[in-house]
Image 1 (cartoon, rainbow, N blue to C red):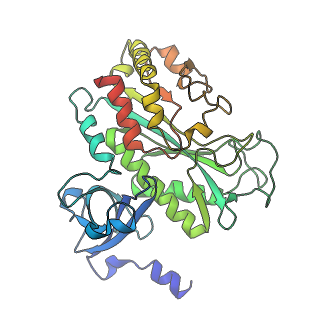
Image 2 (image 1 turned 60 degrees about the horizontal axis):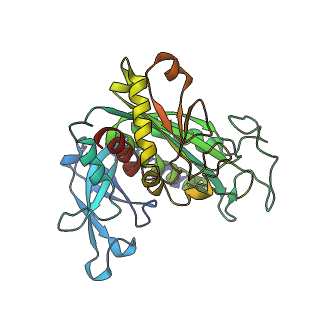
Image 3 (image 1 turned 90 degrees about the vertical axis):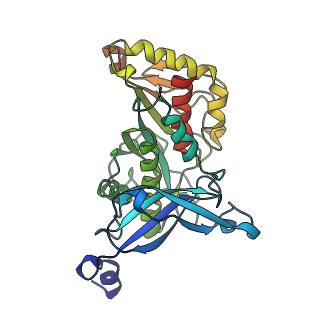
Length: 353
């Protein structure tokens, strides 16, 4: 092992009680993630015990240069799979010095919705995050010939073999790192387009599902950084007869899981249909390139639901129909959606309004 590797893998607990906390926040685009580290005097398990911090918002597109300080509030703690030991990853949200949430902080408003008496402890989410691995220097999917195309879609979904599966080492590293971190990651699979993958987070309650998804994205970005590969959350990275990338959001309330739940599900879907345009506007940038009515999507201007129908806006599973209770899947969110916005909006539409 090289001296460089030795230093990277130093176990700090052998010599000090101090730990490293990596503070993570969402950048100015609403999709990019930023982070920086600080030393703490000892292990911390409660985010309320962590100090607030600040960063230069003029360098992230979140504040003017003459008043550039943005304050980050620690909100959730995860084990750090990169530094290990007692070191931690800290998911934060961002505020002005006066304590007002900045525009890219969607978590603040989401917490208000999840804390509503009608919503609290009522809803579960499972989010299916699709993404595409790209060759760094040419921004072309991993495993695709330079300047060319692979065989048509068909053999790649959940495929195995060097001619069908590209990037499994990255995907498996990410899977294990998320489990180590304490993220409730449910599984992984290869997707329909070669070089495209999916991981699932949940079922988790309320804002925890969102914190976990953002940190899972962060860990994926860090792993692809190490591997020299680019991860794309673009909802339609390749034009033409290739599947796009979504973030299907599975949703279930307590009443949907009880006897008579299927009727509750149908009423919730009816409410979603009435606010289709509002939801679409919040479901991710560039989603019109993905929601075309082809490649397992419903057209962006059409709302429809069905049992086991992957060409619908909302899909209900066969088992839910059979049992008369369970959950449904909102297939409209794009892969680059903000989970704080999407999950809280679903709860607001189906429970509060």
